[in-house]
Length: 226
Image 1 (cartoon, rainbow, N blue to C red):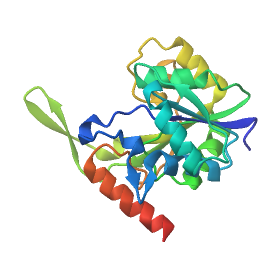
Image 2 (cartoon, one colour):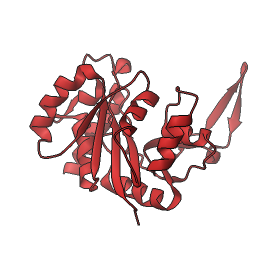
Image 3 (cartoon, rainbow, N blue to C red):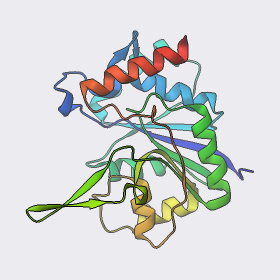
Image 4 (cartoon, rainbow, N blue to C red):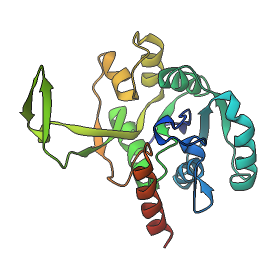
């Protein structure tokens, strides 16, 4: 059973440079609704106590319009992002205090289910960490010099968010970690010598990075609303 409150830090700092779109990916609309709204709605369905949204300050005005239209009934703490994802998460964690559990999630993963979110909180309450993963479907090869070497795909996982942790564990890890270029929270925690517990994620829980990802998200979200 979860002890303390449930926090969520949703990171919405992406600029969408790989999509060659003037609108950052978290603000792109699917069926008339911005991507990050789908993401936040999933967390509210999971009965999260405190939601913290981290984004670049120059997007605050755009966010205010979106919140008024789509999420006016919900309390959401807006926090200015940092230079890297590491700094953005650390800024968000300043608004988190325990005891409790905190989930870190990418705003550009709008197909996350409330079931997966809840599974993360429940597992982290027991193991102090819960990182959503999926097994590889394809064979893989590792580049080694000018050659490639086959690897056993069963030894590898694709890492997703949400990544959910005991609050004290995650905050301490972010305060003491020396490498600010970590691209996920599990790596920050592991760098401080802590084991990371993996849970089953979802192949539908894609991160929107390319136009093809956006097409898939439209499909998955339309199935959920059907």
